[in-house]
Image (cartoon, rainbow, N blue to C red; front, side, top):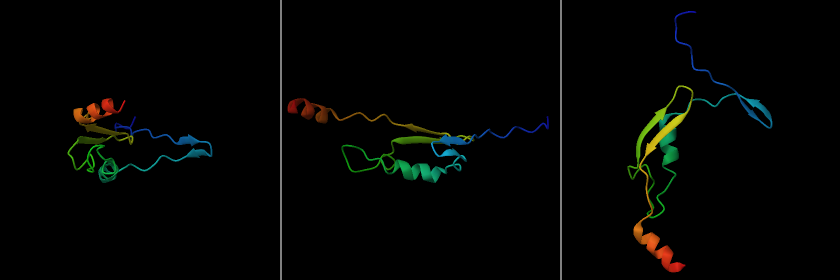
Length: 85
């Protein structure tokens, strides 16, 4: 043993076309950009600008964890949907 911490193990992925190398590590900016494409269903504002994203964690192995607010459909919207039935 060298005494150094082992680098995180990254495995290639299998696809029908064969094995592919792992994707490069994603940046926080790329995650924010992806979140900015998700819009609230009731108003035309994305979830990042609304402040519904509390934290973004990018693990050494490439996994991304996003802590967000659980947004529930407005009560008025639920009432309208019940009236339509």
